Amino acid sequence: MDTIILKSLGGAETVTGSKHLLKTSELTILVDCGLFQGIKSLREQNWESLNVDVAEIDIVILTHAHLDHCGYIPLLVKNGFKGKIYMTEPTKELAKLILLDSAKLQEEDAEKANFHHYTKHNPAKPLYTINDAERSFKQFFTVSENTAIKLSDHIQCRFKPCGHIIGACSVEIKCFEKTIIFSGDIGRTHSTILPPPDFFTEADFIVMESTYGDRLHDNTNLYDKLEHWINLTVKNHGNIIIPSFAVGRAQELIYILYQLKEQNRIPYNLPVIMDSPMAASATDIMVEYAEHIIVNKEKWLEIIEQVNINKEYTNTEEIVHNKQSKIIIAGSGMMTGGRVLEYLKHDIGNSRNTVLIVGFQAEGTRGRALLNESHELKIHGKYYPANANVVELTGLSAHADQSELMEWIRKFKNSPQQIMLVHGEPSAQEALRVKIQTELQIPVKILIKDKEFIF
Image: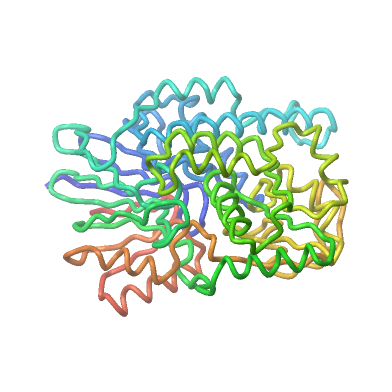
């Protein structure tokens, strides 16, 4: 029987930079192709050569369009990858949007570094350019969900929706006589706008995410919490700042806020401002592919009408200095950059204001610092006292928690031979490893970057 080798080039013992290489005698397949984000030591890995000859990779399979899963694609193509990149139709549109934005930021950062002379390189260069990103789009190929795709004589793959964001899927690869499942990022059992994850039921081996492998999401009523903190902040004449991922989270937020207004639970005339061109474009894509979600197109158009969508950065300063209480939804979700920083600089120091944290905050990010009760934030070279209310709402997470991850495994009719954990911090992975082995008696291995696992 042919040997199959799995090697994680990223997304091993961390939640970012997902790249999982499957080497066989017929094909070498890369599942996901993400950028490292978070602390500097992780980001610096984006500049290092992959521990594989890029020319040897035949195919890329993309589970979904978040930057930590797709953001390295332009560089892979730039460095010589010639093959097809398979993904769903919504993922294709979102990936184009995200990669163009990433390239634009790369170019702007290099330009600023050269202008202000704060770079060790002469000159500083972007990781990749807008032209690099656009060039990679020629290799995008879309697939239908739940349809087997023959990749070679003895290898086929199948995509199944996993409920994380629109277009996101788990992937089954049947390779010779083995079935290998790559979970991708598994979504919540009960999402406000997305159907619950679909499930594969047979596997020999599973490569599984473990982002929240050590915790349960808060099951108290999310709407009650939002209602409480919004009304309290408005009563105190403050602002509600919600740092948000542009794809998925921002759209879920405007839907929930719309419902709260319709139910007269928050002031109907309270401005909701989405200050994110990418979130605006992602919302348009979600409307276009409304058949993939549980809210119809007509309702989305009605919701969007009630949101002040700001695309121009020149308007941000005016919004920042408007003294009327308001809800601001702005990127980036972990506060590593983006327009949310302008609002934080103005509002983080005032106890009348509230920062609602609604997604995972990686190590080394400003979001993690706030969750760790840091007394200050460094933004654009200056320190700002952190006096605002900081509230974490895990009920809005797009990642399954430990109980939902366990339920996902239980859907398999027969226990797999082995589960390999990826996409999680060490504490989360160890907790989930012990939980699976204790309750389900399935062998679990935590993958280590660049270390081969032989099936």
